[in-house]
Amino acid sequence: MNRFFNSLTLLFVLVCNQLYAQFAPKYSNEFLNIGVGARGLAMSGTMTASVDDVTSSYWNPAGLLHIKSKYEVSLMHAEYFAGIAQYDYAGFATPVDSTSHIAISAIRFGVDDIPDTRFLYDANGAINYNNVQFFSAADYAFQVSYAKRLPKLKNLQLGGNFKVIYRQAGDFATAWGFGLDAGAQIKLGKWNVGAMARDITGTFTAWRHNLALLYAIYAQTGNPIPQNSVEITVPKLNIGTSRRFPIQKKFGILTAIELQNTFDGKRNTLISSDFISIAPALGIEGDYKQTIFLRAGIGNYQKIKNFDGSTYNSIQSNFGAGFKLKRFTIDYALTDVVSNDAGLYSHVFSVKAVF
Image (cartoon, rainbow, N blue to C red; front, side, top):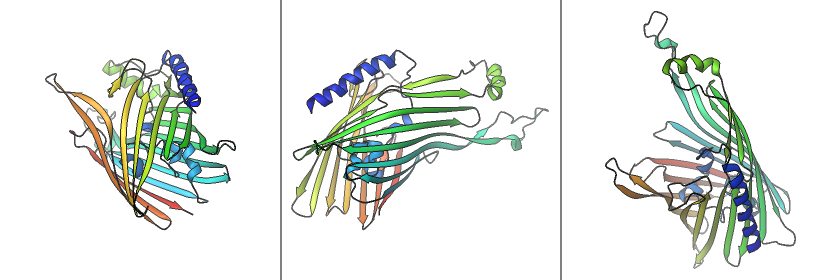
């Protein structure tokens, strides 16, 4: 198994070196790094090793093989930045046979009803609010996931995603992209170990700008005219481990630790270098009869600079709860999407049904 993870790391080094030499901006397609499901968000994304439901299509497709039901469906809604941005997720999973599962999912992150004030002034120079129109800036991702259990290695589960990305800024610009993810989970005694490689071949997103709508405004303001381009998302690698500790017969505590590794240059993380940046995260989940859940997580360590040049350390904390009633599970998370000092908390709700 060590050979497997060593080979995966070596592959990442080779791919990242090749892609980084091309147009690979930092924080490309970042809406895909937020996470899905209130459970995972409450635990600061420490799901690579522990995820075991339909949301595996996002966190680690290998986890789909833990699903015991014929069908599993999940929906999530969240509002960020005081309701300005809407974030939604939907997922569906079902078995193909006794050793494989398939899932489909969709993600949307968007800001709607943005005023277009290009024609606020009419031909006479008077303000005419009837000329103000509205548009949306939204990012979409559609994924098809497949997971397979190897016959000779029953403890090893493998999975992969094929994803299509569509990004839109009104009628001004659109982009299409595609990419691949790969994940693995293995049980070592009482410990679960997982690895999730995102954008393993680089995710290519091609932008197209409608210059007919933009040229006059950009020329008047002296801004450079945007050009059609292809943006490449550099691979990321998440490695995690988890274990559930039973307490008597009715209670249990699940602990999860994860290292979120990026390869697009130095980031504002706990461990940072020109080649790799590592963001550790810790999650915990307490349960009563696997029916009532309390969750917490910490991660997203950053060093923040004040206006006077001084710095301070910030860490993101998340909390949540869940309740399972027969076929339905309702989860809630209170997440801090920026930093503890900013106070920009977001409420996340998700529901899951099994049939």
